[in-house]
Every structure is written in structure tokens, then in C-alpha cells.
Image (cartoon, rainbow, N blue to C red; front, side):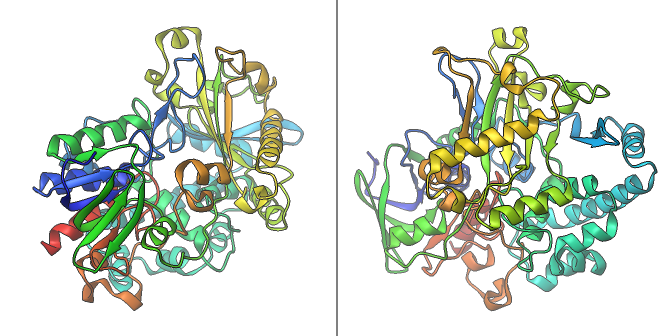
Length: 521
């Protein structure tokens, strides 16, 4: 039960963004209540023992960290750290009938050699360096703006200070830049994948949703690096919950919020335990859930587009490409069926209502970078985790029969992986205490049911460019508008992934919602 009948701020949802907001506001002396419908905090950023009787803590839903600003870690005194992966990526391929691949990592000389061996010249590597040099300069300039008031479009463009790059990434479909820069199909595909994580779009989609996804995937930390959370993703949200509690926030779990009523100055939040008053309500849930709680018309439907698979192996499988060690190949992002043409074919097939014939996916082995997520016995025996993220699997494909479609897509995805292995992956799967293979899969509809992600969309809705749209110029708006967290109600703020500059495990919407509250006094 909540300890009080009224609070300065009630936060709906105990995911990582809600916990960030709670910690900041409590540290500033505000009375804060966090209400969470599940029996634990963390939302999608949790560590779970997913397999019965097996001592392995998997980052079940969210799994890598890039967008979390060090500022938040430092401000809140979090006991949390990340570790860099030794290899950026490996992409298997077949050239002239011979299994080969592209390993990116291990130093510039080694990567240059890998490009030359795959493509026959230095041209693609030189283009790669130039391309990612540009995105790093972009990251260095844009990332620091994410924890400040929302800039106007003109102000962000001035900050980027590169008209050609701005035009290529903010105004033209990303496919044009990729095709102008690279000639090799496989390398084009590796670049494009960052534009398609949880985003159903083609390279030339005029909506530019692929550009927005790409932007958030290359600016994290000012470097674009994607790091492994030590101790699993739950280590972050546990640290956030601890920080919020230490600062004085009250957290109540197993308490679903059923309604919000507001007159713009004060609000009442109704939950399973009754009704509490609040000066402000911060909603760490999707815009769809916000509309439901307010009794308003829902926003346009959102749609996720991914298959999420967690696995535990007794050992890593051997590769057909004998020139690379599996421990290196799986320590970065292992790309499957993600050539440029393959990605477009998969998109067109899914857009036409069918499952991709060669489902594209990417795989990460977190335990190679952070073995602490495994029990000591599993580490000694050589066990490893694998996380697979499948692309171009929109929710619409699962509506007729979710379970059967998920199973068919999982089988096709693993079969595609097996084409690059010297042995079937199934032979490497561990088994749980009941003798079942240690593998679980989640469709977009599963994620909607389990986490409240609308249509399984991991970003809650389409990502937005990190600037204020001209219609609601932040410079002339209220504090919530200035920080990109405004709703149609002055004292109800959006602090989840659906806020402007939301998406990913970043804490940025939580930070920005707290700053908006503190700015208003």
C-alpha cells in the first residue's frame, strides 16, 4: 500500500526511465511514488533465470547499452558498469563457392585485411572508415544534446555543422547514402542493419523511419559503441531502484494503475490499492497506455517487427568459415542473411504478408564478454548464452496464429543460421532441469502481452528526430514541451520511450521528464 494519500509526483511504471525520474526528483526533495503492475521493477531491462534449474541470468528483452549517458550514472551514483566487446561484428558469406566472412575488429590492420580479402581491394574499407568517421563526428555533436532542452531543427542542424551529412541522414532515405558510399552488397547490408532494429522499413522508405532508427544506433555515448552491461541488464535497473529508494522514493509493485484524472493543476491516480493524489503524473508507459488511462482516443497503432530469441549453449558451434574462431565471431554482432539485397527481399516478402524466406537476424553472445551472468559451474564447463534478434517480422504476420507463426519463423531463422555452421545449432543447446532445450522465442504480440509494448514496438511508437517540430517549437512552449515530454495535459508528462528522444535503454526520457518538473518548480 502507498504510505501517503498525495505526492508531488506519481510515476506510472517502474521501468528504467521511471526509476531514473524517481531518483532525480527524490534527490531534489520531492515526494515520489512509483507504481508498477508487475511484481518487480525494471520493465524490459531485466535479468531472468529463463530456464528451469539453470544458473544463467539472461538479459531477457533489452540486452545492450549505448544510449545511457554517463551523466545519469554519475548524477545518481549508480553502481553499474559496461564492458566493451572485443569484436564489432562478424558476417558470414559464401564467395566463389567458398565459406568466408567479414570480421570487423581486432585493430585497424586486421580489419583492413578482412575487407580486402572479402572484396579484393581497399576501396570498401576506405569508404567504411570515411562513413563511420562522419557518424562519429555526428555522435560527438548530437549525443550531448539529448539531456538538454529540446533544440529546434535549425539549432540541431547548426550543431551538426555539416550540411552534406545533415542532408544525407535527416532529409534523404538512408539507402541513397549507403548505395553512394559502398559497392559490396554484404557491406551495404551490414551498414543498413542499424536502421532496421525493431523498425519495419526499406532502405528507401520515404517516411525516413529507417534514418531515425539508424541515427539512434550510431550516436550512443558520442561514439556509437554498443556495450555489454556487467551482470546483465537487470544490474542497471536494480541499481536505479536502489538509487531511487535511497533518495526517498516509494516503490510499490504488484499494483496496476487503472486510471488518471487531471484538471491540469492536480491529478488523481487510481490503482489496485485505491486512489492517490499528485501534483504531477509521469507516465513510463507507451502513448497507447497513457490514452487508455486518461480515457482518451488511442494514438495511431504502433507495430513492432522483430523476433527475440534467448538460448543457452553447452558450447559455441563450429563455423564453416574455418578462418575465424567462433569465440571471436560470436563476441560481436553475428549477422545472418543481412546482405543488402537479402534485407530488401525479406522486407518485401513480409510487406506482402508472408514470412521472409531467408529471415535476417543478428546474434550476440554476452557471456563471452561478461561470464558473470553464468554460474561458476557453467563457466567451467564452457556454456555460453546467445541472444538472437530477428528483423522484418512485423506484428501483422502473427495475428492469425501467433504460436504457430512464431514457431515457423524460429525454425526458418535457425535453419538460416545453420547454413553457416559446420554443425547444427540444435546439437549445442543446453537442456533445463526438465530435459527441455534451453531456447525461448518472443514475437511482437508476445512482447505486447508481457510488457505492454504496443504491437510489440520496442520504441513504443516510431522514433522521432531529436529536435522540436516547428508546430511545437520548444523555445516558445512549456517546460514539458521544451524537454520533449509534454502531453495534452500540463501536469501529465510522458517519461517513457514514446517521448521525443526516447527509445533504447537510455534513461533520457526519465531524466528529461524530471528536469521539466524541476524547471517548473
